[in-house]
Image (cartoon, rainbow, N blue to C red; front, side, top):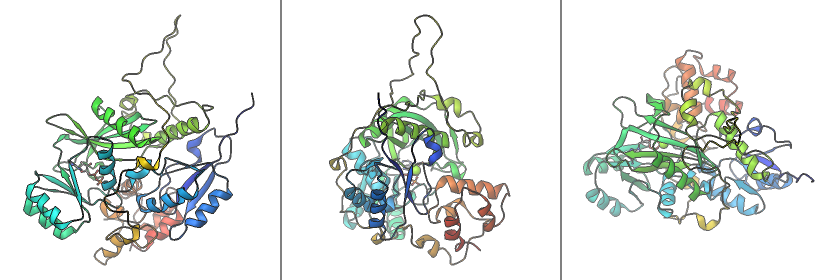
Length: 439
Ligand SMILES: Nc1ncnc2c1ncn2[C@@H]1O[C@H](COP(=O)(O)OP(=O)(O)O)[C@@H](O)[C@H]1O
Ligand SMILES: [Mg+2]
């Protein structure tokens, strides 16, 4: 039988944005994989032409929030290119507002949330709501160590916070009393949970942030959290997906706090995702990865430094070598599946027509000078005493990279900004971008 031609695969990259995938994840793919990099600022037409010229059929990669509206237009101009994950699937990547609209549309349990641009509505909400409320900045990069997430216990605190922060829209939700002061991250591939862990808050903190003194555990992930994550992944039609889930300590009910296709994952998880994608787009010529449910409990016993270096993990299905061999049933009832096609109508209605990113007040725009960096006390950062939060305000920085840099500083492997250039996980572009922020 003639081997069917494989589609032409391309990576979607953006300047200053960490790359989720590279060639090494797609081990065994026999053809050349193309790359197309978006350079920001009026780069749409050039990008479209490059995709056409390279005859790409499938464009793989995450679109950061800042570029979401632009990429909606790019995808429209390339109707024969499959974006993977689809633009519709990536709706929730854009903002917390979008996460809430997505959960509402698909009836996925999430904290009761108000999103409003109207001052009067805001006022009446804070008069009548139950407390505590969690107020968040809706747009902009997330995972900034709680920099844009606040807890208020009464009306006065709410009003004073909002007069200080001036977030638009107001995004405020019921605080879930967190079971074990933690929340759960679940990662899924083809709607199957492949990794999950609890993140606990640091001592005296209400917010769970493992990069600020919290801890984590791969044990005792409740089934209802996995089921809620699967429901969200299916609604999003996501090839890969992650959810942050809070468990109410009184009712044990799970609630989605955040969900997206963009998340920090160990390389071996990205290898599994790439293997799943190869299976999907090759009509089964590549093998679907088999990841036993709860295998994260065993992997989680390893030191994170080891987990960071594990690659191309392979589980075979367990087959006892006896006559009439049987398959050992996977615990739980979760299968890795093909996702369904996305349609424009999958996407929830926006509260306000989306505004071009550069016109949103207080919005960090990649490719421009970072507004937060400009507004810091006019001084430059010193590497020795920089905090994680400050590192995270740098353009194009993400949590995983920032934590890595913090480790280098704490272990005294580096004492000056310049020494960072010796590490290959930081690009020249990033170095020159950040150089202006350091002493
Ligand atoms: N509604 C809520 N109830 C209780 N805790 C919350 C709630 N929303 C957020 N948190 C806590 O704050 C953390 C950060 O909130 P999140 O929405 O994930 O923002 P980000 O990751 O962008 O900082 C969560 O991991 C969780 O610990
Ligand atoms: Mg979060």
